[in-house]
Amino acid sequence: MKVKVCMGSNCTLLGAMSLLDQIESLREIIDENEKEYRDEELEIESIKCLGYCKDTDADIAPVVIVDDDVIFNATGQIVMEKIMDKMRI
Ligand code: FES
Image (cartoon, rainbow, N blue to C red; front, top):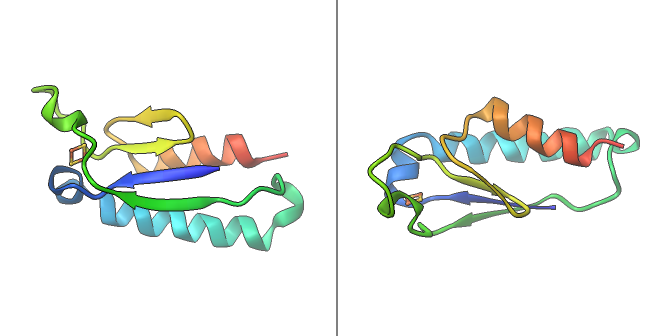
């Protein structure tokens, strides 16, 4: 599974760094409890702004992409649940 966290300025201002930390902590938890999760690498990547925030006047930051699902206004809870739902056996 690939998780991309936008680290553009808008997303960083609205907490992307904290999201990145939380996702990395979740990866450690998944590694420690490997029997409960699919045998799949959780790849985490920080990316530059893909332009979502520039295409709209709405507040959409921070943006996280889990596989092909783009999550706007991402919170730790939403992102963690998404990852765990997909990874859990
Ligand atoms: S800074 Fe994250 S979408 Fe633009």
